[in-house]
Length: 570
Image (cartoon, rainbow, N blue to C red; front, side, top):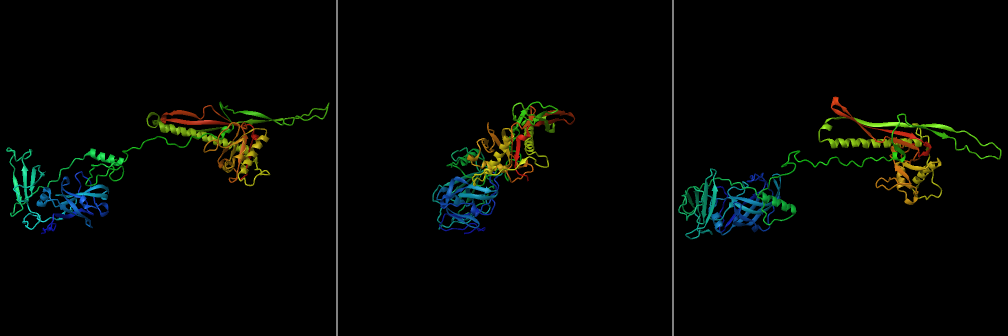
């Protein structure tokens, strides 16, 4: 037989039900935990190879199984399932009632992206009054089940009520919208009794003092009872077991498979750190503040210390001195006895120092001083100013060394010496050897000026030639490398060779090697004992503090001839 809606049809000689278990492309209803609706597709659900593993229960009660799946088919509409109802009292009660027409899938390992399911695994099914999907329902029932219970079951059907004075019962209790408690008893004789519970104490037939109950009975055989009205009561919300949730999360993180781990029927609510479903609002979670970041090592002077560098008081008028010239050839060889001694004269020249000053100043708001929270930033700023002072004065010393060595007049390099050629017998395959020759040429020029060479500064071209020159071709009195990464270090008793940027070699050819060298005492640099100097002054009118960092650098060129520059002009 088929009812008016066309959902049920008689299947002869069978205890089989069939229906749409999981629709595709349809949003589910919200769960009791207010989980947002979820939509499934054919690719988002995994069907077990053995359908019998899927158990059919009543109202998601796994302790009340009534059958097993015999067929699971993926169609365009969704997963169509066929179940065989077990020959148990519970199975008989379900077949006898026929009131639960809805099917609902039970899914495990559910992962979703918003409303769309990404992955899930079909683990069970249930019959219920209200399913998660509106279109999920039974459309085929076993023989003897009708939509209205108004037709007598033919005697040819496989299922008949047992001939016994006693019958098995299936008892359920529920509460309607007005809070009234009801008990429904379904028997294997296809009788359904709904009674109102008028006392909180459980009904007991053996208790003579039990309260009276109002009975409504519907029989399925040979009579037309009053319509059975079941209150439309939503199942009560179940509390979330937080301990079970956190235990499952810890197990997943540790890679442990729980033996009794229940999967949710629907996706849990998304709780993320950003984007849709994010728990924290912008700015709620703060980053771990680590303060000032590494900006590289502080600047260490490289060129100024190559010369005679001292600290102490600097005279306002500077320093001055004289040099005696022309005394080298005053003594001559005598021509014989009783002859006049050789004679001659000498000259003097005056040398004077120069002084330069450097500094930086700022008007700092008094809030930096009186309010907390900014001391670290302000301290780092003034350390940066001091670091700048060290670099600027060092580069000023390098520029002075170049001017003295090359006699830079602003118009020409009047004392520039041309690079020498390779000496005879130099191996032709020594491509980098010319750099060594040019360095030795500069050091020899200092020796020829009756002084001891102490330092050499080369441009990047000559530096590359030196560092790639085999060790056996470098003179023992030259040091290039001990410091890792820089190739520069001070070694007692050896000549220090350091690299300088091409911009320091003004007016020279950038593609050619350039070198300048000098004696330790050729140039004197002097600074105050405490350098740089920090000066603070209150600016009451603007509620601030005027702070300045200043320093003085005195330069005294003592022996310019004890410096030399070898290279080519641009």
